[in-house]
Image (cartoon, rainbow, N blue to C red):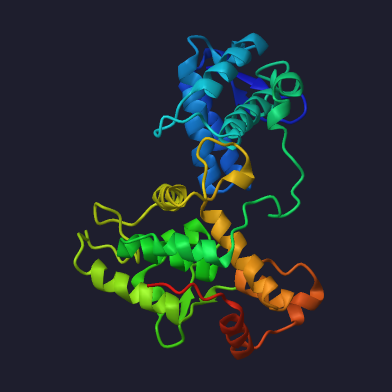
Length: 330
């Protein structure tokens, strides 16, 4: 296979015009391993591009704006596993992956110009990325509504997942990666695995949460287990995954009227991340100091004064117990 030399850099690229679409995508995925994208983002891009590829019966190098318009119509009418149309964020992710793919091809001079910028300006206005302004637009529920949600759950595992998310504000992936040994029953805290977005690795839980967790531990010993140390098991006995956690919360939130699966408005939807938002909001409303909330959330310390300011663990725990809402869980 002949190579092509970039005019800008002395790098030899393969001649993708002689490659299949599968090889094109494979080379792109190898390339973005050099970027700072998370593993989960790379997997999402891979999935989106495979579907993008299967939609066409031509080389992806020859895709033009008319082709992209047809793909847009297809994606906007596609149904998910619940027979619902895809959310706007999911559709946006498809085109973000496609745009990144064509940026790669343009950079290597395998196409003259990516069709995506012009296409995005005219046809993707409703999916335009908005500047991040925090979680203020997300659905906020009251303490009473959170109590109704968790008390509507009968299954010990599902109840423990919901209560732990509400009482600790941890992320889905952090919860998924928990092992039984990560729970410190004496200190009533959980030791999280190191992660790029997490600074503080210890989060506290209260007596309400402890009671529900212990109930799940008893139930866990009677469930199928293929030998995993995971705190939360799936139906096959393995580690519970991110999608399962998402579907769990959405299922129960829908049942009690907190989640509208037919709406694309973020205010009408209640997802696992809303638990983290609720946790943060309630701690602040109940008077916790902002630096304590940031510490419990594991937010990055951006200023020098934050780096040198050491928070006393006992003070942090006492403040947490004083501010975390009681849900009257039964």
